[in-house]
Length: 84
Image (cartoon, rainbow, N blue to C red; front, side):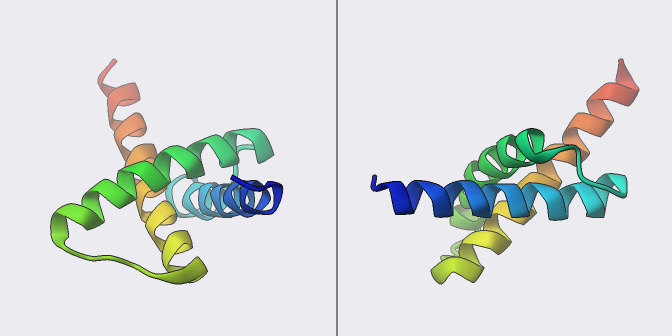
């Protein structure tokens, strides 16, 4: 992975985590947490979209996939936190 690809990967993760934080909690959680949530969300979103047979393309598709996965992650975390 090139340095340029890594920077794009981290930026997409950060933006996706920030958007998901706004959608689920009403605000972002900080840059580091946003990046982590966005990256984990990208894996979750990729899995979910793959199961549905949807293959998003390009930077916008990656951002949408990561955001959807991050929203799923934050909703699951919220449910688990309330159950505990």
